[in-house]
Every structure is written in structure tokens, then in C-alpha cells.
Image (cartoon, rainbow, N blue to C red):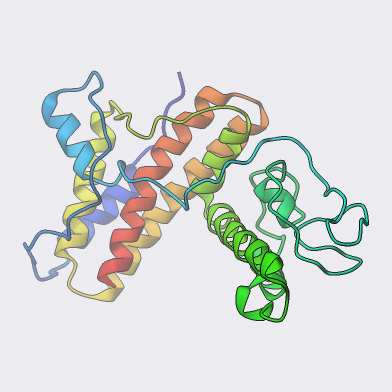
Length: 261
């Protein structure tokens, strides 16, 4: 059975932060996005609390319909050159969206979880320079339409791959694995930890305290991110899915600290 990392260091810090003389602010945090949690085997109270904490929101940009087939570009519709991708390398005509191209191919990346050192942002900006509708105003109406579709696709791809959780979910999707984001995790210890985090964030009266809390949460998120990568690399998809479910809670917790900073 795959066990989650211990919550000791974070819990001790939260307790210390609460006892550090911070002014107590009892106003509730802004409402979380609509819960998408469905009942599991935990108690009704646990189901409700897990739903209103940080594990029930959808993550990342909406996925477009892309297959997991490899696609290196077909023949250009304008000049007939082979290997035409988002735009033709020969005549520079913008190409229509190819449903066989996945998000990793768009940025010339291997289909893997760890993409930290691949200059994703730079590659995204390069494509936007070529495809942004404002930059192709002199092209034909057909190409402007293609450019709008391709630009939207590149934005979706960048938003999905730039965040660990949405990238993990997309990798699972390409493997044909659907992650039920409505599923509630039956883990009282995780529930308790999320409630402690929420209380600490609510009570924090200065940015320094919030930054410390955020740092601790990010460490837990990184721990589960590493767990996902190990499981995914081993094709242990059950554990990979479990890791994404835990990552969702910690990612939402980080976002709440950002809102208050």
C-alpha cells in the first residue's frame, strides 16, 4: 500500500506560527471553487470538509482533443512541402490544427514529466510570435483563421505543461488513463492537515508568516510530485493517480496563500 509522506514538519510549523503571537483573523477565506468531490467510504463530515478544502477544483487549462499518436507534420496545404508543422518551414504558411500532435510535440519536448530545463516559456513565446493573430494580419483569411486556432492550442499546451499537476494529468490522459477528479480521498490525516493549513493561513497577519507556510506546503507538493514521476516512470499508474490526487490538495493550498499575500 502506498503511504503518503509524513506531515510532521509542516504540522509543527503551523503550530509554531499559530503560537507566535500572530493576530487572529477569524474571517473565512474566500469561497473555494465549486466542489466536485463525490462520496467515498469516509464519514459524511469528512466528505464535506474534503470537498470544501483544496482538493476538488479542476486543474489546468481544458484539454483539447489530441491523440497520443506521433505526428511530425504533413504536407503543407500551400506549397506541398513535407514536414509542415504549426507553420510551414518553407513558405511559412500557417497550417491547420493537426489532431495527431500532442502538447509535448508542439514545444519539441520528450513526452516526460520532468521538463524543468527545457525553456518552455521561451519556446511558447517563439510560437506566439509566429501564430498570434495580431502578427498575421497581412495573411489570407484562411491563414488568419488557422493562426487563431493554433495560437489557442499553443496557449492551452503551455498552461497545461507549465504546472506539475496539470502536466501529470495530461501525461496520464495520453496513456489512456482517466483521473476521476470528483473522487474524495478517504484519509482523515490529510483532512486534518488541510484544516490546520487553512486555519494557519486565515490567522496569519503578515506576509513573512504566509511565506513560511507557503514554503512548507510547496515542500509537500514537491514530495508528491517526485512520487508521481517515480510511479509514472515505472508505469505504476495506480500510484501515479494517487499522487495527483494528493498534489491537487497541496496545489490549491499554495494558491490560497498566494491570494492572501
